[in-house]
Image (tube, rainbow, N blue to C red):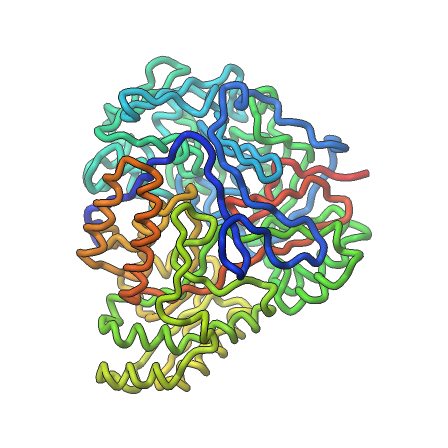
Length: 589
């Protein structure tokens, strides 16, 4: 593990009001629904606002026709990499955590309306001192699964432990804001007896955060799973990742890593304190190891027997089955669809590929059209037009390298760039996530790169360790896939996280090892802007500047299609996480 350089995690100034997540179709422009209209329930653009204290009261609004009881079976490809909330930084892990973990704030969803509300807190937080101070008050009756009250001391401990050396994953916004320097050097966590003076447990129910600079969007950050509560008394440090103490509606009763996980009701969860989770099922049984095609086939047939009560959070319809699913009217009521809030990239390791002309050659050679066809064709998504996803405020449509006009790639142009760089027959190590579909895509990519004059080496990496491997600085790979979604919907949680060269470190999300002083300085300038509209516009302009330096290849902005069993109700698409939320799920008679 190399030492971390100065980490300048960014914070956006989010206006208190409504943010429109303008998911768009291939025609560009904001706010449109997907151009695909072949049945199924399609998510509209999400409207995100900050709620009131009244919005933060429980219980969650009842779902029409829903009744409590029964067991839901959930099938997934991979087990959840982490259960300790401080280590969770994926949409799949965060979604599962909704069942067992709560934070100060969270998102309440009602169709396309998404509201930031108080979860454990009585409201979404009270800023003062121009946004430098934030105060939260805990609700009455919030408890751990053992019946002990959740207190402000638990909240303080939860934040402090995110600094501990064994916490290697998870978000780092709040840690940086609290220290204004390399947070790993500033503080090592609470286990040696030292504590943060600017996180104050004022009384058992009041927690206060004090910053040197304003952070108008701190309440959005606190909705991230990384900052959810961990019991101070029940903290087992590294072991907590195996079986965390529940603050949510369910608790873990059994787990066989990579095979099964079972949840049962946490009887000390009080629905009257929770505006987000309905928690209708009595039990959740998770099974892992389902690749895309077997999972899709199982869900297609899920109208009889046990399969009727089967669903998945993220087992999207396999590309090889997509046309069959979209063309089958009998599946319409069991199909959930939505526009992805995530951007897909093929990262170029700028530490190994230092010549920009070689990086440009890779971009020109890249076979986006063939990749999309292998994934299932045009219905699977649109070619990305920038680094920002269209759902992010500040998005500006662009096509710096002409990939929209020629998505199949231009091997002749790539060869000319390699010749100009003096790098003919350049060796490229392409790594892929070792799934059947990615194996197929790797063949497509290998063929295209060889045609463009590259010497290609293909390297598979296990799915469970994928992000651990690609987040290493000294990785012996040159090009690789990675997805990213805004932690909250502004460019501040995308471009600085992915492209600020001062964040390069093992575990960092600067996967491309991109470090450009001009870009770093522009990030600082934009962060200092006080007007959110001006800031969002600046992120869009910076997107283009970064692309012009060829650090990565924009991929495909995917559309999300997922089936569920015929007795599953309340399967609602989460437009912020590209996943099926568990919060309203119930079993039909």
